[in-house]
Structure formats: C-alpha cells, structure tokens
Image (cartoon, rainbow, N blue to C red; front, side, top):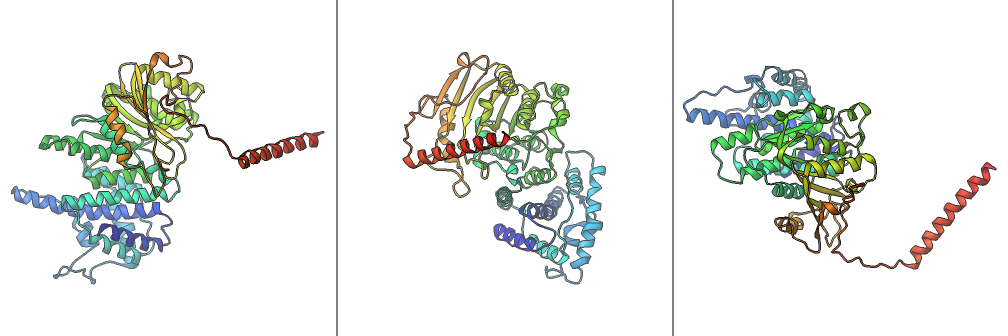
Length: 484
C-alpha cells in the first residue's frame, strides 16, 4: 500500500510546476507525511492517557489538526467536500496560515529535545513548493489513506522512506550524498557494536542512516526497560547537518524510524573550532560517512591544526577530537587517504595512528556507492591508545557493483566473521605499525596474500596506445613550431 501510494504521489508532483526533481518530491512528501504521522501519534497518546485516567492536551490547536484542515470527515467517515479546502483556498491556507503557525513552535517549545521544537525547526527550513492547490489536495487524499499506528505499519513506512532517499540519490543533483548503502551501514554498526548508554554521534548526518540503523540495532539488542527506551529516545543519538534538505530528511527519517525528537542540529560542523571541544561535548561512538571531494574555505581551515581544504580530512580531525577516551568509531573515507603524499594526509595518518588504535581497515570495491566512481575504505578505530597492528580486509566480489547489482549484507559476512579474531585469509592480513614507513605513514591496502595474475594486452590495445602517444607528440611538436 505504501509503495503504490508513494508512486502515485510522485506522479502527481511530476506534473506540478513547483516540483522539478526527485529531491523536491521527497521534500514535499515529507512535510505532508509528517503532519499525518503527527495526527496518528496524537491519537495514540490520547488513547494512552485515557487508559491511565489522564487528560491529553494536543500539540496543535484544533484548526491546524490534520482531521480539520486536511481531511474533515462527514458522519460516515468520508471526506466532507463542503468543508475540505482545495485549489487556491487550500494553497493559501497552507502558505499563509499553517506554515507560519507551525514555525512558531521553535520559539515556544520547552526544550530542543521535544517534538514541538523539531516541528518548528522543520517548518522554518522548508516551504510548500506545490503550486497547484488541486495537486496538493490529491496528495493529501493519498497520504490520508496511510496509517502509522502499528509497529508493522511504522516499519514499512520507514523502509519505504529509505527507498525514496535511495532513489533520490540515484536521480543525481548531488542526491547521492544523502545515501550510504544500508548493508554497509548495518555492517559498520554491527562491528562497532554500540551499547545502550553510549552517546552516538554523526557530524555529517545526511539522511541519518547511521543513527537510524544504530537505533534499530540497540532497540533489538535486548528487552528494553522503560528507562532504556527513554535513554534511546532522548540521550543516545546526536547529529549535525549543514544542508537544509538533508537536515529535514534526516530528521524525518529518524522520526519515522521511531525517534520522536531527534537531536539533530542544522549547522556546519566544520565551522566549530576543534580546540573549543571540551569533555562534556564528547561522544562514546562516532558513525559517519563525511562528504569527500568538497573544498572548504581558508577561514574554516583555521579551525583545525592540520590545514587542508579536503572536507573529509577536516571531518576526520573533528571525529578524533570529539571522541571520548576509549570511544569507538566507524568512518567511511576515500581510499586515497591511505596513501596520499601531501603534508596534510601524512600528518593526519600520523595523528590517527598515534592518538587512536586503528585496528581495522575495510577496503571496498568501486561501485559500492551507486553513481560515485570513487573507491572508499572504512576506518575502525578506538581513541586513547596508539596503534600496534592494523588488520586489513579487502572485499573482493565476483561481480561488478552498480545500480542493478548493489552491495548486500551477505557480501560482508566473511569480513564480520574474520574481524572477530583478526584472522588472516586470502582477503585479509595484518600490518605491524613497526613496519609502517615513519616518514610517509603510508597505509596502502596492498594484499600480500592475493596472487596477481599477469594479463597480456591485446595487440589492438598496444597499437591504440601507440597511436595516442604519436598524436600527443605531434600536438606538442606543432605547438613548439607555432611559437618559433
């Protein structure tokens, strides 16, 4: 039901002049879904209060509740067309009454860890882009059919919301930065193995995939007491996100997964000077896939002892600094980090090896991230003691990864198993820190157990290369002659 509803909504938004891409579809679907979700949450809370003999006060004033402005019903439970807004009336109500009303919750909420505050923050960050009030009415009618009452319904909803984020990534326009493959996230969480009571942090939260997966992992780790559940809801998951759309999607994703008021802040993590980080600011677990390839301005670089414009390298410094002593991390980074010869890369590898135990490096194949050709590795480290040995695992698959052939959890099963004992195999090996070059700190993932097969090039390949070199030589010669 959810899947077909989402498809129908996309079809409606596709023909609306205000929505031009998959990113817009996700954003606009999100705010309407949130208000329907809030309606069902309020009904559940009212029922729970009634069973306890208490009175529940709704968050929203009556005229802004879903059952009044979005879906007023007649006595038979059908849409009351005499009271239901549509066309310009509906769009004007949403733009000039509903959104301003919802925004003001940010100022009036008791604290940032409440759903009221999150609602105010979300509706301060976005606007209604659906230009046709008739299209908006159709979308509302479809979303009203969805239910978020049972555990199964909420699980299906969160799963399909993840699928929409994935599709958004596949659609381009930098959407890929919002989506890390779920099997990889699940494996990283499993290996880091957080516990209830840990404070878990992602400073480049994106769609909050790491925090959502960690929540599900901890939720299923044991029978939760009411105190455990409250700890997970309020004092476990923390994130920061620079981009507005990613912030909205990440917050929504956590809410749909069951975290009512996510501790996600809309800010540029890298604008914080890491020398200002104090013990109270630190976390026991870091799980992240920071953006790589980005360039930061000189004033941002001043916040870090190792100066570099590479975004991911700045994030790695931030993560090392913000971990508590004994804290654990699983961080995705471009594989060139292991061997780059620039001063920043060398200094950063030295910092990592000396201040943390970099116990594991997972070397991933190209195509792991759909739409991104770069190769990546996952660094697993624990802060507080220097590295003695680094265990490498190289994921070698008998197929090429891509959109139609993505990474799955079974691909990573051997890694998870061998990691338990840091066993050597055809795909894994250990390197003593004593054998690492003390000048370059090169950590290249060179598998000593893999036999390199000599491949002979075809004559055509050799001839084509010779032709290309001849053409290049001719161009250089002509340019020299032209200057004479």
